[in-house]
Length: 421
Image (cartoon, rainbow, N blue to C red):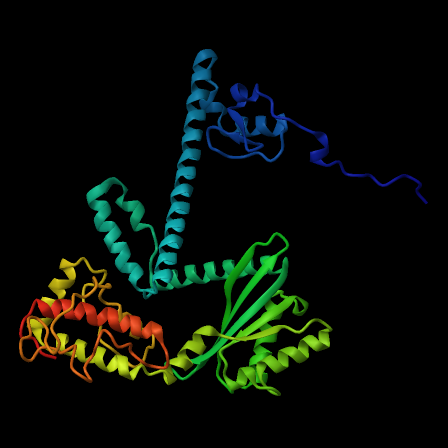
């Protein structure tokens, strides 16, 4: 039985070999990124051993380069080193150009996403850039042509940025001291229910983060239990903790606010199971405004406003004169808006089309613009009167808007004697 110890192989890294400067003149070798590199053929030698370097030079280049001696040999080494540096710079420049083209692709894709433009518009943007480059800097037109703006590329860039933002949000969510959620479920044009979930959180440094957490397509039922299941999956994926939930805001639908099977009820039961304080449940103010718009019709105000607008828009001459009048008084608006019952927000816009006018000078009762027949009468019983407030459930705001609009219409009609409404 042999008692000799097993032989341990020596590692090259343990030898601590270093490149010798004399090898440049003797063997036309330099050290590039820690590896001996031949200046003549750019071949690399793995180990800093003179035997390996000398063997490479002797077998491949000795016959051709042995004739160079003294200063001539030094000049030859210097020229070869310059050529090697040029090759390195070429690849560095190519890498910088590639990185610049990639960055430009991401920047333009972000602009397309923020503007809500179709992804295929990227090709049109590229054509515009190439035309501009051919005029401004023709020598750099090739660099612009290397930027990819195809529809698939734009979609991929936007998806990458979305994933990156979500990863950043998940990282911030780990440090939330408290957060609240806002949920809105609505149906798109394809009759698919879309559940949007927003999160607003604050960390220990009082830095507030508000972001769209996710949008979930719900192809089945939209019951409170199903919405709650989607919410649980979303909170788990984002790394949020139930114990940090401080409030939840919904759109007020029965599936959200139901006492037993609504989303809020499921959330409260979940918090009770976790043994944490109950979250505050709120009704979205925007949805409350939409509900109010279905009840408060403003008929006594809007009927007159619509009549004025129809009078202006139904006659081309009156319409042109009214637009010239808005330009003359330097109004913020260039034209009068058309009224629609769909959007409640349009109502203040209609009555605010014209800026508030100067206080009206008194005129003769029963007449306007010098008492001409057929003009609007401000003094007759039942007619609109500046001395009588507009009564509609004590809504002073609507009265002010109404007066502001009619005052400016009166100013405009004074400039067109004989105008009738």
